[in-house]
Length: 254
Image (cartoon, rainbow, N blue to C red; front, side, top):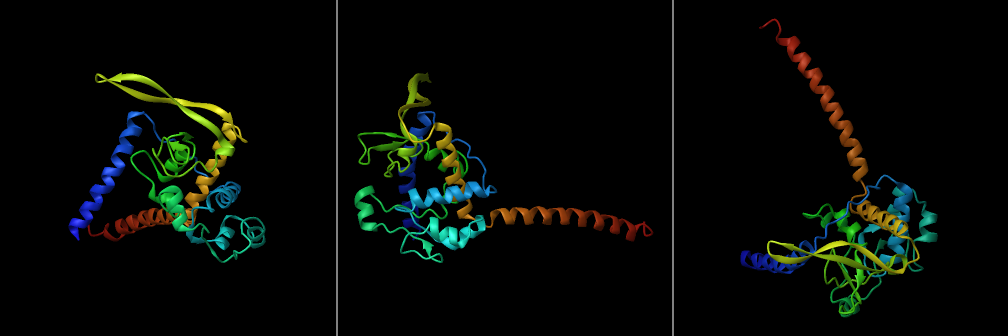
């Protein structure tokens, strides 16, 4: 069993290392994702984008539609705007895609996204940072089966699901010399064809989607943080009281 785990670890490292090296060589870094998990309109818009653009391939099997009431949506709004004809409001968010067909199309079955914002953190930043960067880093690549590639995840099997909103872009690199070797350094993006949204509008839509994915990974996060602050304040106050009581009890002994 131990040998099997070690072999799996080395296999994953062998797969990830070239991708990380390529990203580092190109000087590409993750962008900071806006924190919008307390913004209910942003979360509602993110849920809309998720259902319309992501749920056709990716499931969120640990999230039920009726849980969206926590972000301010009524059950009727969920039924009218976010449910497909065969879904019920108490159902989990499962994709209808055939796993065998998905493997033929993309090389692997699209992963479940319920916890993706919590599982994608790394040396470059948090999980939301990665998702925010990933969804804004697609570019046309005719050598790939889907016609798309991604700087945050080189040779990704996923096509650019939001390309009509963003349009087509291509990365711009500059060649610099480091330690006697020429390396490509990422400089920015060049818009090739316009999308339905401007760059600012598209980045905002992606921020809303990422905020929803972050909220979906832990719906109770904001409540946990709020309660945690009050608990710390209580403990601080109780510490002061206990300190003064201790001084009062022992003053005559000393």
